[in-house]
Image (tube, rainbow, N blue to C red; front, side, top):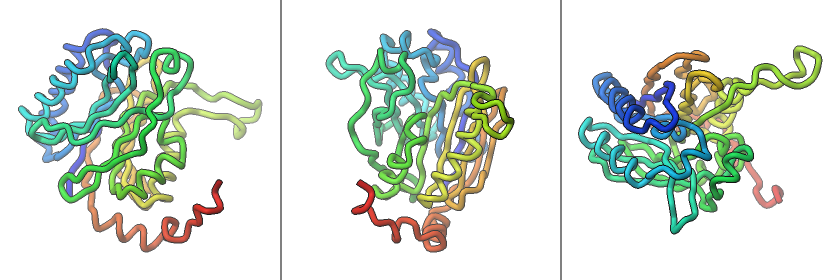
Amino acid sequence: MARIAALQAESRVGEPTENLALIRRAAVRAAEAGADLLLTPELFATGYAPALAASSDGAGIRKELAAIADEEGIGLVASTVEDDSGTRFISASFFDETGTELLRYRKAHLFGDEERSAFMPGAGMPRTAEFRGLRVALGICYDIEFPEYARAAARAGADLLCIPTAVPATGDVGGPQPLHTYNAERISTLLVPARALENGVYIAYANHSGAGFTGTSVIASPYGTLLAAAGADGEELLLTDIHPDEVQRARRINTYAHDMRPELYR
């Protein structure tokens, strides 16, 4: 069993020192609550403003994040900018409790013109790392809205998907009928639990709060139930226990992975 925490909070654009201090405070709280791993939102250290964040010192921020994990004795998942010979990616890193970076993942599905103008999409498939008896995979925000991503992570052996996110608030948009509208809050309340159910995995999904964001961070079980959920606004630290045995039990009950026919889905 592992206990995980997901931070929902408001970051300040262009204030990495302040935002990193907030992450450290959350790491202290999470560790005191017995958590083994803390998940933080997408580009939290820089504030979510892709065009501005693109020029940030991602390597330096990752060193600071590794130090937080090491000094507070807790695993940490956080999103930064990765610069690969001038090509920039939105990345997520998974540090263990010693500050060792176990995984780094590049966001494959960029959202909106601002992200696409500042970054390149990642081309790699999700990989996993072992932590506290779990196989952990990373994704970032829009990635989880594509069933192919979640299925690829599950087929790679993941028990837990950690998803830093930055979901913009939309309100109700679409058709004139009340039941024919879209609201981005449904990503948390409907789509994330569905991805967890159909793949038999836990999913931790940490979003920003504050103006312009939906909040509504969640942790979903492999049965598609919500184990923890934050409100639409305000800082919250979600905590829940992850049981590897439940992953296997859920997959025996819902045999999607066994019964799928990938040769047809082309």
